[in-house]
Length: 240
Ligand code: G3H
Image (tube, rainbow, N blue to C red; front, side):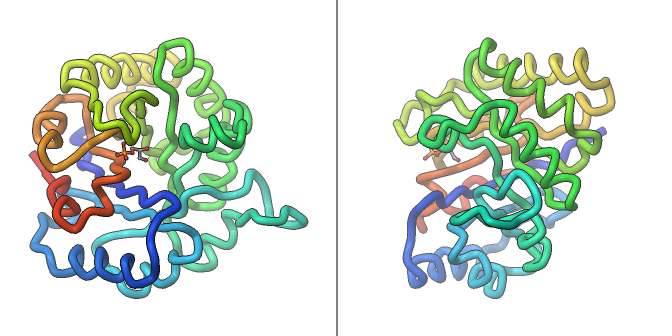
C-alpha cells in the first residue's frame, strides 16, 4: 500500500502571534500538491492552536505538541486529548525527545499517552529514540497498547541531529527506518509495517530534504527550526 508523504512542522516553544500569522500566510499562499499526495501538519504552541486552526488553509492540519496521559482533571498545566477533540485539533505529537530528556517522560508513560490519545480519536505523531537500545523499549509500550495504527505516525529523531545542523545522511536514515519497519513487522504485523508512515526529524532543511525523501522508507519529516523560517517553510512539501 502506498504511504502518503507526511510533513510535520514542530514550532516547539517559539513565536509570537504576529510571527505565527506570517508563517500561516506563507503556507496559505503556496501552491502545493494535493492533500491526497502530501499530508501537511503544523504544530504551534498550545496558546496558538486555535489561532492557527482558524487561519490555516483547510487542506493543512494542526497538531498539539503534547497532551495528558488520561482524562483531564486536577493536572495543572496539562491539556487533555478530550480538549483537543473539543477544539477540532486532529493531531498531537507525543514523546518528543525534548520532553523525554527535560521532563523525564518514560517509555511506559509515552506508550500510555499514545494509546489514550488514539482511543479518544486524536491522531499521534509518536517520537522514538535514536539507538536500537532506545528504539525497541520505546516502541514496545506503544505496540502493546495501540490497536489502531492507522492513526499513528512514527517519528525517528536522532538526538544528535536535533537543532544541531548535523542531519543524518540519507543512507543512515534509510537504514534506521528500514529497521523500524522490520520491527513493526516482527512485533505488530506485516500490514502495520507496510502502511505506517515513518518520518525523520533532525536538522531537515530545504537543502537536504529531497535526498532524504528519496529513500524508500522515509515517509516524511518532522521539521523543527526550519519550519519557522519563511524562506524554508515550503521546501519540505516534496512528494515523490
Ligand atoms: O520536532 C522536530 C525535531 O526535534 C527536529 O528539530 O529540525 O530543529 O532539528 P530540528
